[in-house]
Length: 304
Image (cartoon, rainbow, N blue to C red; front, top):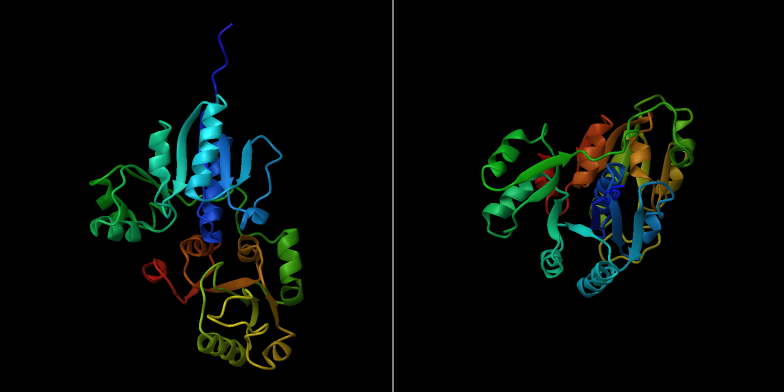
């Protein structure tokens, strides 16, 4: 009897920001569903956001992050006799190609930003890597992607979302908990979702202006307000005095929520966001209009 073919084995490393982790997790799950064995190398700081797979995807979570730790883990996997084929790592890391070369693995650079930003980096000679899998969407950036493909092997594989990721009348448990105080008596498409991402910071002045706009508009809204969202501030409540009491009957303010599930809720009619690429793709997928408030890096080109 012929030996059963071994499943291809990929080591996957996300960059430890939520907007990067989400598409990397989706990629890992897609590969696992196609027969890959996945070893997912994760950081302790974001490990609470990803639970160990309990089904046939064979996703393993390891709480290590630095290049030295990653190299140690890869060495252990290779030494154990595992037939590892490739190392898929977020392009924000600068060292995965060296680790892949050391252990004879194919290095796949995973780009989680739009193709326009990639081509800017490429032509500034800040990026000299051959062969990229990219999260950009062919239909959104056909001209830029076509130009890139004349230079290097470039594959736009986005959007990478679960098959059941869509706007639905049947709210999930997480969305019901988050949206219940606002959405239970609100018309479809009448609630604004406000989020500044998992890392970006705003000034106190900007936050006050946004709060004033929400106050004057009388719109119902869900706001994700991280404790550290205001630059150089230790205030427990950086919002204007009395704001939360004023909007209590038409708003909910939380430190974190499942953005995917909130955007998929039928009550949501708009997103005020920092324009991280993951937020852009999720809002387009859920057909939620955007109010753009870019803060860093690719967010200014994403807005366009």
